[in-house]
Image 1 (cartoon, rainbow, N blue to C red):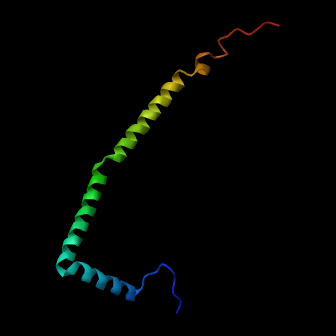
Image 2 (cartoon, rainbow, N blue to C red; image 1 turned 30 degrees about the vertical axis):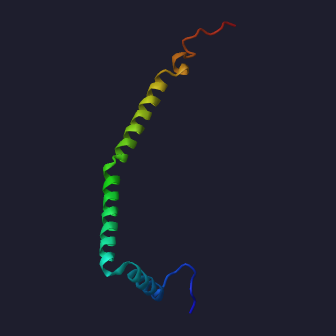
Image 3 (cartoon, rainbow, N blue to C red; image 1 turned 90 degrees about the vertical axis):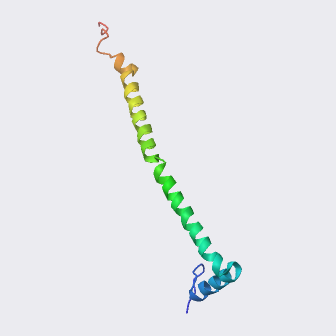
Length: 89
């Protein structure tokens, strides 16, 4: 049987669970799990409410507006060579 480095098998998981049970006790483990679950729930809620997607859309819209404004004041468009008189030969 070949064992891969970094893989945790069944016996290792059982040993870890026994050690956790001995360290924290049967009454403390549910409290820790509840706290961990609440923390994950709060984190997800905060990331969803942050409005990051809306902020990115606003910034992209402002960049597009600036680009349009810059194109309107482009010196190449203002000084068209067609308006200048051609030198006579």
